[in-house]
Length: 377
Ligand code: UDP
Image (cartoon, rainbow, N blue to C red; front, top):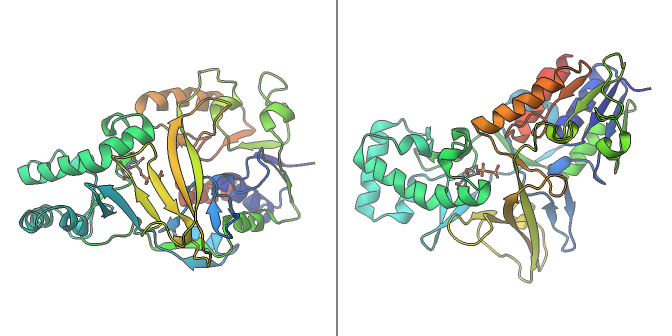
């Protein structure tokens, strides 16, 4: 009946389904464990009438015209540039750490010296990863880097990953670089916006096609029974499988559980119009949570109350908690490679997405990846 079965209705699954149905005229069955589509991008209106992102804040940004134009076929957008503050030494200061942050935290003479040194060694409006700045031969810049490392990265990363910045792939902390200039925006991609009617509606539009059937609340591994040790992925099977879930679960943890971090999302209603001055405030050095997001800043709403979200990162426990972040380092990558090699034995199986590929993909990375692979099958 179906040409493809896709497991998971997040970005990897929904975009793949849409491309197969629309560009290749394939019949697609999408199987989703949760009661909704959208994966971790899922949003809904809460009891305060405020749009909340149930699995943590999702702020769409991309510099890919291709991704932007493709998604714009399924949603209108509300322009939105994300601003994040970090609570450091009793002050809320802008991050990525930039010239404004330096001025907020250092005496004027020191701030000027740091800014001049940065401009001497780096071009204006460029980004410098903290781990690079820490190795700089200039004493002043190393002093600045040590301050930023200690106050912004070290304890946040310990909470977020259970590791120090050196123990995790350097691309992770490089996501929040030192910015040589005064741009306070968290992202500086060309296109930055929120789907006008929310992410969930965007996913519904992606999946709205006569060739696509979506089955919600169906657990592929436990109910559909195509797990290798039961029926098996048969190479002669005509239906192709695109799997977007955690790859270790697919193969019954045969090479042990892959390390992921999970996040406990704690929503709170506050009985006042606004709670904080920015959409997200990070707490590198205080509390067990990493950050507080107030959704009214992302989706402006007239309400006497406000909804905030505190994120508590935790160690993922297989089959109990939701895997959110692959913990990307050499050791775990080697373990993942074993799973990937096993998957390659099944010619009708494709792994795609953050969990299945064990990659720290952003939303636009996944869409581009699907466009480049599934779009061209
Ligand atoms: N990070 C940090 N302090 C911060 C913000 C980020 O140390 O205030 C580090 C931390 O290791 C984090 C990584 O930078 O996991 C990437 O941060 P990002 O905000 O991109 O994470 P996400 O929004 O994907 O959770």
